[in-house]
Image (tube, rainbow, N blue to C red; front, top):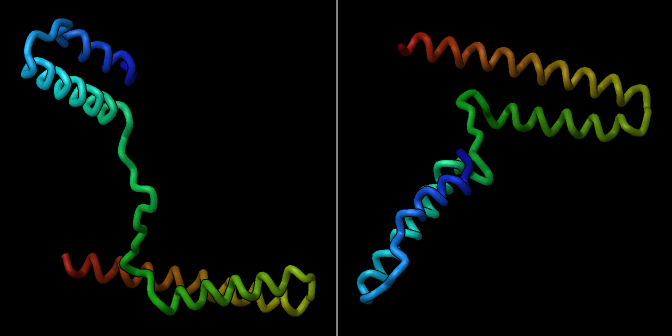
Length: 112
């Protein structure tokens, strides 16, 4: 079922005649809850900027990442030496990630 059909099924139960102030308040609260419930059932809540924190990420990897990006920006100017330095920096960066991830996984497994 979709959001619209869920909302319609909830709102079919609301009264149409309002004799007292209390009935109006209860009905408005019921309608508000129905709208919220149908939205929550059909629209999953996601954080706009979900934190992506990895236990193996470090300042050293951050600096290596910036260095690789810096070498790439220089290499875009098509200088042969710059491309070689970029490839070397990229190789070191990727190798370091693999080593750090393995060590992190090993540490986690040993702690269990």
